[in-house]
Length: 241
Image 1 (tube, rainbow, N blue to C red):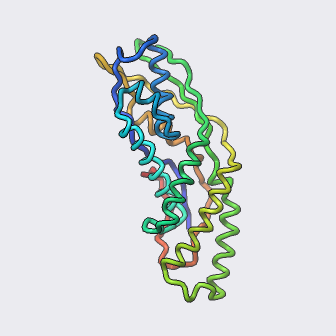
Image 2: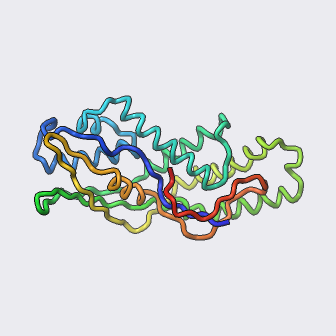
Image 3: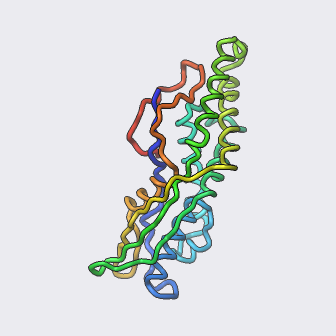
């Protein structure tokens, strides 16, 4: 089985911000806007985002929750976990996703102008948790499959069996968030799109930022349980989401 992690496609971007809504010069407002977009999506820090964009607080908080939930769902897909109806493990995976995002490292450079267009460089240090935990997951899967072969789960219901396997994966990810590493920084240049009274960044530019937040995995790995009903997870070039 091959799995390739590409990126987690999130929501946000076409949020227009008034050019006259905040103090300071235009360059400062552009930089503050991009920083607030990043924090609203990955850290749940919405005060600056609300101030900068004029967004509703409930909507800003919903952005963060939706993104954390999306990452949790894609981690479930990545590891072949079926826990959407598991009242214990589904919330745990969402908390893992929030914890992963809480470790985001980034830098937003001062805007620069080129041919009357403003550009901003955003540098991301990709979170390497999937590679950090790879060996632990591989070892765990081997041990779990050996137990399957030994008949230790013969009397388990399918739900209990899936719960048992998923709990071990989540344990590893939870531990991994405590000591994760980062890949070498990469920079995305985003364009500030200005209207008559508004400015924003495009969905494509935000996706380019998002694609770097979690480091990709290109190694062939086999983090699946012994259940033959586990969905196929062939290598894909599609984005998460």
